[in-house]
Length: 317
Image (tube, rainbow, N blue to C red; front, top):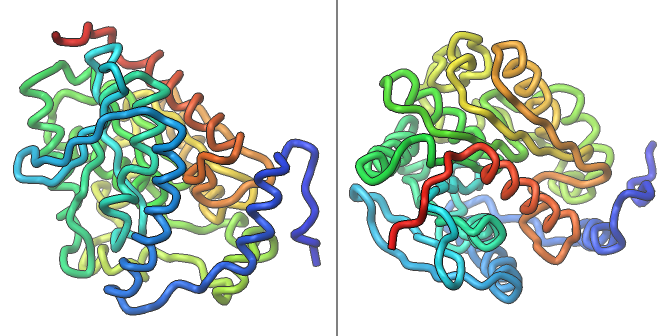
């Protein structure tokens, strides 16, 4: 048995301490209402850390009938580019504070406007409801700016949703977004060796019985066809060939690492300019806590990626 307390020299002391604390973290409830309340309280705490570190302005409003959080850096955006941020949470929770956890740091570090989309969630709404919401916001943005100045990113379920949104944009022959980023998830089901590794090395996962999420376990995919490229585009080379430049981020103890690494290889095989960043010793969605140096490094990487790949569009006065 591998001792999960062991870390290499590349893992910060802050990350090591947080990892050990996670072994004693409360086990999430099972009822959906309680689960959403549980994660909202948790995400509110993480969002407080982000807002203490990053100065932004947040406006809650609707775009094309979809609730969003419009986040801009304090003092205004430096370019006219816009990012769509798609939160994680198994397609069942993560709206509100959870939708802002990545949007706030990325907006501040990249100097860009970030729109966090509160898409419809399961079990009340199933596929393709979330994709419909993202496409509605994306189409509204296209009436204001060039597609090459729009980026899309998300974590975990948000990464799966990002892949589905890109596939849908391609299928509807809309102008393609300028870049995308997939963090701790991809356009593939979870599986592979990383699931086994996480069961050994992640104490939080072990405390919850070691169960790994499978596509069939997501209420959101009720009735969806796994063979449909709009559901899991990572299995369809012709669809992947239409993807924009894509950044993929994962970690050695992330149960999604296998899916992310396979997605990276398949994007490369399809001729897409894809980049993979793997953090040693870290876990699923490690970057949500901005107190970790590795989290801040993740946001620097994302900011540089989008600044490099989105077209230079002057900010509107």
